[in-house]
Image 1 (cartoon, helix red, strand yellow):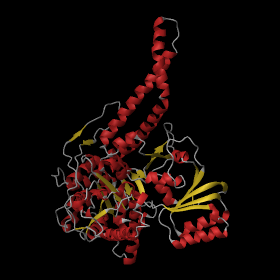
Image 2: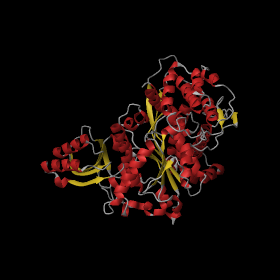
Image 3: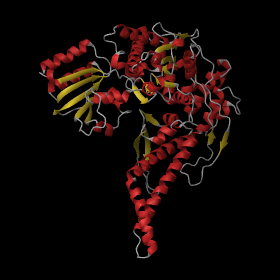
Image 4: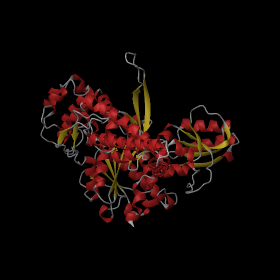
Amino acid sequence: IAAAIMPELYKIPKKTALKRMLNFNTPPLKNTTAEPVWKVLIYDRFGQDIISPLLSVKELRDMGITLHLLLHSDRDPIPDVPAIYFVMPTEENIDRICQDLRNQLYESYYLNFISAISRSKLEDIASAALAANAVNQVTKVFDQYLNFITLEDDMFVLCNQNKEQISYHAINKPDIMDTDMEVIMDTIVDSLFCFFVTLGAVPIIRCPRGNAAEMVAVKLDKKLRENLRDARNSLFTGDTMGAGQFSFQRPLFVLADRNLDLATPLHHTWTYQALIHDVLDFHLNRVTLEESLGSEAGARPKKKTKKSYDLTAADQFWQKHKGSPFPEVAESVQEELDKYRAQEDEVKRLKSIMGLEGEDEGAISMLSDNTAKLTSAVSSLPELLEKKRLIDLHTNVATAVLDHIKSRKLDVYFEYEEKLMSKSTLDKSLLDIITDPDAGTPEDKMRLFLIFYITAQQPPSEVRLYASPTIKALIYCQEFSLWKMPVLPYTCGAIATHLFSRVMNTGSQFVMEGVKNLVLKQHVSIYLLLGLNSCHGDVSSNMHGFPSSSPLLTLIILQAIVFVVGGGNYIEYQNLVDYTKAKQGKRVMYGCSELFSAAQFMKQLSQLGQK
């Protein structure tokens, strides 16, 4: 039974929930040829961020969405079309919805709130509808409980808009008031509650003691119990439960605090997706590159333009290689390019043969033999063009990543940091890299120094001698956040000792000369260790369980959800993905309060260091 329902439980069913909402909150019919009902989608920035990683413009059009507009933009009346609203229940949004009702903008209104709307705000809408004589036009009002962003089937982040309100900096400010901390915790808990309502499962909660993660766990546990207590109105009974209704299928939810591991977010990485997030502008599954237009020799360089690419689940190359080491990705892009060129050359050759002149038997025979081949080639042309688009996409993205690797010697940083974090023998001193003018930016050097500082055996006074005045502010921040928290031993560093340099074939788009091809070995992160220990029923003195959670030994734990309070990154996500590939029947999801790059995390540390 467990195996039969596993696929439903282990994917975040958010896309299904969104499609249901866009179909007027009824399940969309499969295999139907009927035309969809045409409608307008109105969302705020929160709704836009939730929808954009999951549904393309084409998918929205297929669902009957002819127009999608921001709530607070200037919108013309379209009186004969229904409107689906997908917004947060904020005061400003409610006021604008009431204004739309007064202005009679649409034929009917389907109001969907990302989080639960309060009774008082609902009454405000009712009053506005009554005053505008539009009561019958407000067709449905739903609480969708979708206040989180799904980036992958097994990865989610709480918010993108106003993320500074629940950031690492906000949580760890030394002068934070208790009331402010309560607001932060409530915001995080509201989103996590929405996540579990959407998943359709009541979690078994575990967390370390004595930090922000424990505060979140206590509040979430209370909110879940309050909802379960009212069986008639519980969001975890009946159809809402979905695959998670079986008690033995309850997921383990491990809450962790960012302060348990400050090194990983600063780490220079070596896998494709994590590298893109580190060195490029990668945001909600969309990467934006600066591309300079070609100019004639001697002419002034033309202005750079920005071009965006969506990296989606429909991109098979992305799905296969996003977790691969970069040299492997570069080689695979080149192989795909060579395959495409071979197919393209075959089409050209067949066209040439079809145009042969003359009556000789050889030409006629060749023409007959190749007609079927050409027909097949032409019929596969749309597929070939799509393949070319994806090859161009990854060629451009991988080239941009490679430029950063070569100009900043990121392979050197990655190798050295891996050795630091795994306590391996170092082949050179820290100062050799920091003082090398060709090795990276000042930010790269600062990241390396901080990892050295966090993982070093020397007392802080000795390590401080290496610091420049710029880094000292950050060291102060480390003292505030690191020494205050009990730190688990660093078992998370990958061991990458088998190194070799190579040059790819001379016809390659990617000249890897001077770049090390680092062989990755699987490592176990602190957060994964917490999850594994909890999965095996090991609730040690520093791990906190909750009364509403059943004893682990009586349950089959097939799924764990690791959530980092204070922010996360693609390095940790990939670590969990690699682990689950090796464990048949086990799944681990990854979530975080915000998703930041190393540069964004450094900025928050700097702000804390200046206090």
